[in-house]
Structures are given as structure tokens and as C-alpha cells.
Length: 382
Ligand SMILES: [Zn+2]
Image (cartoon, rainbow, N blue to C red; front, side, top):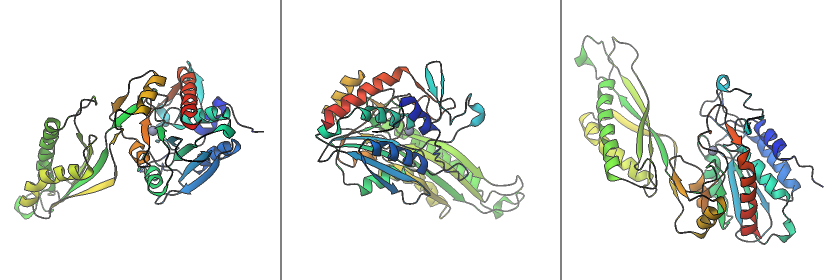
């Protein structure tokens, strides 16, 4: 017989197994412990387990667990990593689940290790012998930084479930659409020199000032030319995120860098956004030859839209009791959708608590989530 932990205990073990993803090396961790934990649990329930190292990462793995055989079925997907935490701003240890005021506090309780504790609970009562279609569980690596795990999964897997749920915290509201995300660095190469002789140098900050002017007009143009009323921020966005340049007040600034991100609406491609950037900067590139360049900071994430009307969305609306909606943040949904399945983002906990100190999952979501997952499994696998 199995020796599986109860819901609270499995949540505790998941949270206690740190798997932080960060672009800062000092924070970044592998996820082998949590992947091993999930493998051990789902194996006991009869799932076949495959674990794949994610190329380009250190000690990061995707796990796919499969119960049953045949075509179609249901995929329940989530990421096994979390963001870093600011220890001084937490009221409890972020890696120890603490129950207080009808909430479980801990890093990843809602975003989104908690989802795997729910899946485990739902799978305990399954009669595997009666499954008509397969049930898949996917735990990815590195969602919080590069989405390398989901990208790799989409490129290499040939499974084709009928439907997929990404259990990100949506307060159990079915999400059918989100924006894409890309980040770029604009670099201005000037010519340094003594500040008393401006004509001997080329001031990179002064050129960047003009670059920023062009970017701000691009931002306004995008707000006028593109609109999707499903979003509360209805246009694509452009954010000037970080700037660095020069070293001393008495030197002409020789080098300046600006990091920005853009969030596209569904239907806009990366190429379209890059073309808009290129057009905006073209007059300055002509005025200052070979001084302005832009490069991708990390691979972009596409926008996501589940085509409507779709039976899966209607069913999710019915069982969750919520109308579907669009959100501004990005998820792994566009990669999972590449498998060819109807895809929704739908999970317990609120995005308002994600990436925050004192992240929590409310007790009030437990029964609803259990019921939702059981209903989904029954509908698509039996
Ligand atoms: Zn997440």
C-alpha cells in the first residue's frame, strides 16, 4: 500500500524543498529535490515517471508523470520553482509552512507548489484501472526566469492531451488570454573625453536622452493603434526599467545602456514589436551611425489566447463558477498549447500574493480546488 502524506504534510514538504530561480547566480538553485519528491509520490500511485534535464540549466529538471494509456486525456501542469524571497519582510520562515488566520503561509504556497499538493490529493482516490484516457502531470523548471523548462518540453514531447490546465494562481478563475513578454537592452556607444572640451567626444547620455524621447512616442502610438478590451491594460506596454551610463561628472559619457520590456497583445508577434522598435530608432541610427544597438536580454515569451468559443472553457466556467478572463502577466500556457490541446490557466490562490513576502493560500480554496480537479479528471480521463 502507499505511504503518502496528507495535504498539509505534502504542502509542507514541497515548500521545505527550496527551488529558487533567479538571474542572479547567488540565488539560483536546482530543483532536483522537489522533482524527486514528486516522482516518489506519483510513482506510488502507479504513474510512470520520466525526468529530463533541461538543456542550458544547472541541475534543473522537468518531470512528466503519466497514468493510463491511449490518446487524449488531461494534462495538469505547473512550475516547480519559485522566485527569491526577502527574508526580513517575511513574518515567518518562507520555507516552513505556517498556519495562521485560516491561511497557509510559505514561499510557493500559491505560486505554485501548492497546486501539486492538490493534484496529489485528487489522484489518491483515482481508480487507475478504470481510466479511459491518460492523466498527465507536468512539473517544469525555471518558469520564473527563462521558461526554459516549458520551452524544452514543448519542443521535445509528442504527447497530445485533449485539454491542459496550468495551475497558476488565478483565484480559480479560468484565464483564456494573456500578454507576451520581451526584454531588450539598448546600448549607446559614445566617445569619452574631458568635459571641458565637448567637441572632442560624443556624449552617450545625450544620445540616450533622444532614444528615450522616441521610445516614449512609440509608447503613445502603441496605446492609440492597438487595443484589446479583454485586458484591463488594453494596449501593449513598454517599460523603461533600468539605465546605466558614465562614471564621472567631468568626463564625457562614453557608454550608456537602457533595459526595457514590452508586453504584446495576443495576435502581435515578436517580429512586429521588434520592427516597431527598429522604426522608432531608425532616424537616430541614421543620425549617429554605428552608435546605437539593441539586443534581447533573454528569450521572449509569446502571448497566449485560447480560441473561443471552446467547450473546455465553458466547462471550466461552469465548474469554477467564474466567467473566463484575460490577465496581464505571462505564463507557460503558450508553450503547453503547442502540444495541440485546448489550454487554460486556472488555479488556487491569488496572483496578488505571488512574488510577495508572506505569500499565502487561503483554507477557503482547499475544498473548491479539490472538487474542481476531481471533476476535471473524471470528465477528461474516465
Ligand atoms: Zn507562477
